[in-house]
Amino acid sequence: MCERAGLLAELKHGAGCRIDEAAEKLHRLSQDIWSCPELAYDERKAHDRLVAFFSQEEEGWKVDSHFKLDTAFRATWGPGGGGEGDVVSVAFLCEYDALPGIGHACGHNLIAEVGAAAALGFKAAVEKSSKLPVRVTVLGTPAEEDGGGKIDLIREGAFDGLDVVFMAHPLQDDAPFLPHVAEHDVTVKYHGKASHASAYPWEGVNALDAAVLCYNNLSVLRQQIKPDWRIHGIIKHGGVKPNIIPAYTELEYYLRTPSRAELPVIKAKAEMCFRSAAMATGCEVEVEYARNAFDNILRNRTLEDLYEENGKALGMEFTTDEEVLTNASGSTDFGNVSFVVPGIHSYFYIGSKALSHTEEYTVAAGDQKAQFYTLRTAKALAMTALDVLLCPDLLQRVKDEFTEAKLKEDRLLKDGPTDNTKNA
Ligand SMILES: NCCCC[C@H](NC(=O)CCN)C(=O)O
Image (tube, rainbow, N blue to C red; front, side, top):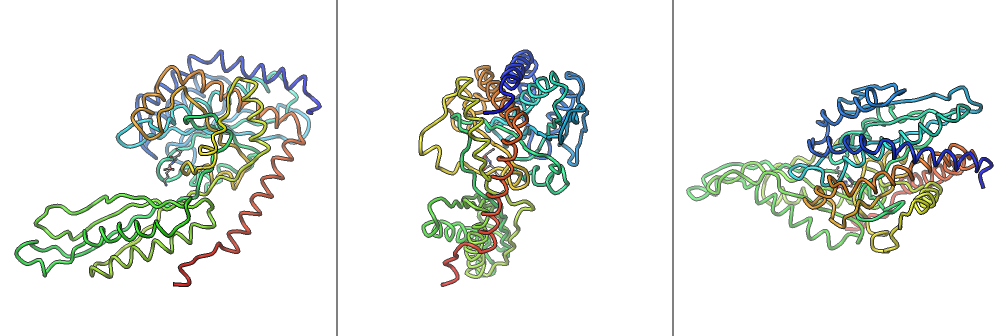
């Protein structure tokens, strides 16, 4: 039980009121982002809109536009207000990139809104109590769907000095945590030799054959990997005309494992598939891994429990469906953040059972119905941040759990998981 339970309850109430008060402009914010979907690293309008929100529509924030990345931003309030004790540095994260062709099918417009709303609520609550030593940061993190803006920002030091970070992602259910797997993108290029496909095919080296063999090799490999590992991809370039033997082809694959320590194993297996296809066809092969690999999310059960308790108090019904709770739901660059700062990446229902990355989900993410759930989630995040701020032993528990979980993962990385390809 927190010593300052009375004050805590009052501040939580205050945070909720502030979020309700700002409901209309928060809705406008997410609508503006939703109606103009922009791809990773190109979220210029979303960046400008969020910067305007914190510098013009809201008071008291110091805003850094183009913060370390062209489409990232930072808004800060604090630090400390002259309170007693060490300043606690709390951050809320906003994402705002969309998907090619289908707009905001992952609902990142709502992630921007929920992050902004939670920050507004939290700031309003702590502002009332001038003694609280706190610094509030809102970080606008581009390029989650492609590239991994948070990983660039970590490298640039944007997460240095933060004590705890909060974000929430829309989905089909409310959940304090869903497993997110480690992931690395790889591009495979085959270089062959063009020739007339009917007149003198023996003069050609067929790069499409290499791509197809590669695709099939990987499909066969899928049979021999663990059930929760994933390999999936596309052929981006498959040639230009049936009567020209393709001289160039390109595939893009995502390789995923539940832990970042297992990624090297799946990569080694995939590598044999890439290279053997080149050898069989006489093509040259280039294998290029993306600049950033995504880490799995390091859980923080202390934060999850607090979030769940606050969510329940607000009427959330958390999913108990084992399939949802245990199936890997994708990857996120928040995984890398979770290895640097303790944090929570919860999921929230938006009034629709549509599946992410579909046109139906794009519609749901722009629907007025999503607003109630988005703001409720923002309240739960702000309340959880208040728990951590007002009860110092909770913050210590959050930090201890983080250190222990990280140690465990580091040990796994150092010892390395078993790789059965080594016996081949
Ligand atoms: N490097 C590619 C990353 C793809 C990230 C993407 N994330 C999600 O769908 C969940 C959150 N937006 C994925 O897992 O495919």
